[in-house]
Length: 104
Image (cartoon, rainbow, N blue to C red):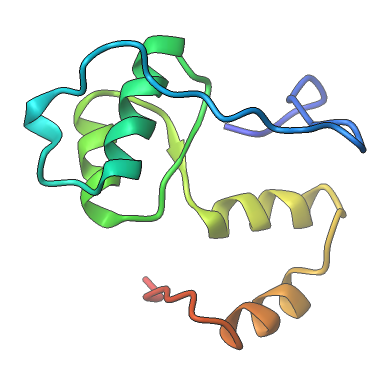
């Protein structure tokens, strides 16, 4: 999880790189969309510290595979904790988009 002083933060001006899994996708993941299948496969290959998932089925599968994951709201909450954004303002803005979340 993103916490503590040693947590990775991309420096300003950094670029993200798109990676694709090297292995054949696990047929057991066929119930997920392509993006979630690739994300889980890549997280397993890279032994990722954290996997960003919002889809409930993908999150259940990641948990079953013992892959650490976080959702969009978790990332925003962590950014607010680090005082990188105002969570209340961002949540209001998020409500104006097509992003859907179900309060727990």
